[in-house]
Length: 397
Image 1 (cartoon, rainbow, N blue to C red):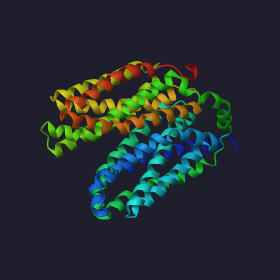
Image 2: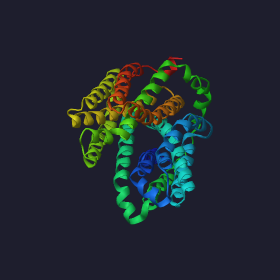
Image 3: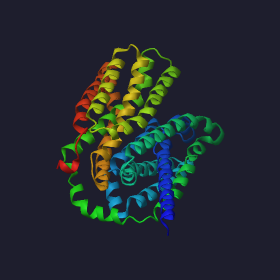
Image 4: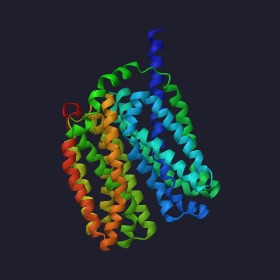
């Protein structure tokens, strides 16, 4: 094979990998976010209680927390590409199960989708670190942007699709992109990963000591706090705004505004972060944005400003959290381990956030006390972000 042919083959592999990452990003949230607008239809059709209906969004978060630590181990044993490929087979199976109008199939299918997304959540940052070492910021930005836009689109089109295809047809539509991802990643299985295999054997002894690294715990805390705030606000912001006098429709549009502010930041921040010597200033600014927006929501004035700032803060924090897995590690296997550790505890905290917020509101019958939780979490994020913004976990054991 000539040098030109080798270069063409290499470029083809890179482009196929890029397309595969984009397809994964599309499916990281869309199959879950499509459920919310359809919950009423599903409840009426299947006769679900509110508890079971609520579990449709809780199950994936719990799966994220439980399976994230296992993903790096499976990747070390079977290879990252193979693990991602089989995870997407699980997504396809889960989506197919959800088509059948039965409560058991619906819940099992949702569990399968959540389990598969948990694995891909963990392994995508190290895959980008390994294959795009000079463009980690750009790739992380594209990944975050596509993922969040797809989630927003799925929320927006689910109800219109359900009027034509019924709720199970609206959920099934995301099987198309999942099947395309399986096809693209089947090609990745043919690529040899000998160097990765050697790296796994050499680094296994150090990666299992991540729990002894203070920096790894700082990154984990940063991931957890930003997830805690985001999912809490995502759940309760509309109801909070209705209390302040907004109509339910206006409150929904305000939530959409927050999401819109998030999109560009998930793309821009990873690119900026990759060019910085350290990310301490960026992390503290992100924490301050959370703090100001939380205090603003507590004040009850200029609410559109604070909602917009909350969206910017959420986008910043997510972009930084994804970048920390690559920037705070030297080896790809370490990035996978750090990603698994941080996302496991992070999504566990995220699942607790909306529940804790609701419990405190019920106790005090006021938004002031639960909003003080967000203020406290934002203050902690400033401090933790500064500590997580520099160094390598390999040198902090």
